[in-house]
Length: 109
Image (cartoon, rainbow, N blue to C red; front, side):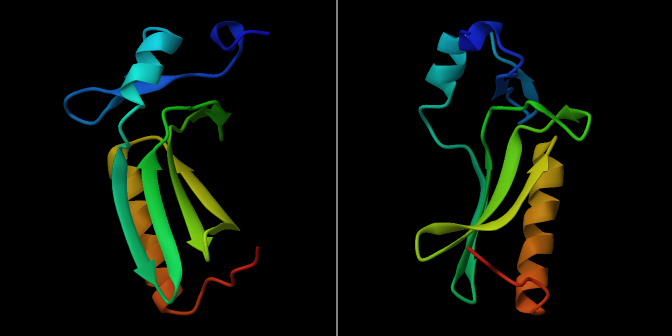
């Protein structure tokens, strides 16, 4: 099955950082050539990376094209969170930082 005919939803960001449906795979591919980072921080040796990934399959009942990943020594950890908006992603990123600093995140690979 081609990506165009799959249930995968592709998004780009408008001028206000709101996700909107991409006008096809080519438009999405062109937009995604540049990274669209919400934030990147390192806390206690863990890299917290939150970005617009442009793919928003149905996650918890709605498209969530933003994602936070925790990375240690170049390897993704078993913690990730998806978000529907830039604002939610920024807030979620901050919450991950607080949780790591408070020792509330037990990381596993």
